[in-house]
Length: 379
Image (tube, rainbow, N blue to C red; front, side, top):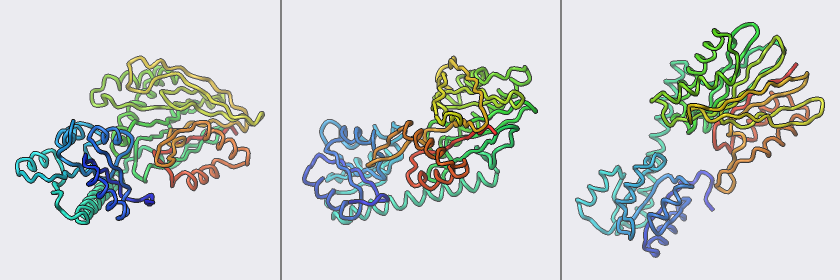
């Protein structure tokens, strides 16, 4: 049985005997090994699993190795997986064609199996080290520029205790972003968003979304328009016509806190339903919002919900990383499971600081995405 940190390799070959020999050798070396007898089956496998490397035969029926590689480099999720050709053919022109398709290497099948395993091991190690160095350099640059998409601390809001918890997937900044915007003595806005994608790719786009949100809120306040639904519509309209953000989508939860009336107004754009805990009844209920993901269509159909909180009531907005988990190598989501766990923690008289600590200890090792949650507690 392979360890959770085992290297993952996908073997593609229409020769069942050779495939069995390779699978045995890689498994014995500690790899998590998947095998497919054709390129078509390999593509189906890749739609559900991403290996660390692909070792593919050239001569296969229906779709040969070159055609298989062409399919992969035209797919954003597959093009960067290290790819190695495996064949009995030693034609230099064929090798050159394969390497021109950004294949990392070309291995002749007569090569001893243990050498093939060593080559793939070294390849994966080298790629992982290069990625780690790249991530480290970007982290250093972000710190040097003091670039943040999540604030260091929560604001002080009269009549409410506001706090949050955020954990980046694999400690690499990703698509989740948080902002607290105080516009005057009466109104404050709380922003929670999640740009589609993982890690740095999503992180780069969060700044564009945050800039538009801040601008929309400021312009709305100048016109005395405090509506959260209208603010989301303004942001969505601009994003839909921004060519730089074409096909980049984001969820968003937007909350306006009225410190004078001591109420909150909530609107959502493709986000998870918020959760409202009522201290008087001890119940936790969903607060649904209408509205499409930002950037999907020009008319997002946004609405808003006015929520009156009594002392001890709590309002939660959060991203999907808190409901996603991995089971037997498969990603799953369970909103109600998280809802029940949150209620149990509240019933155990846990403060939000204790809830944050619990989430950090129990969720962090099994994260499959960025996690963010914001708590608004009525004093």
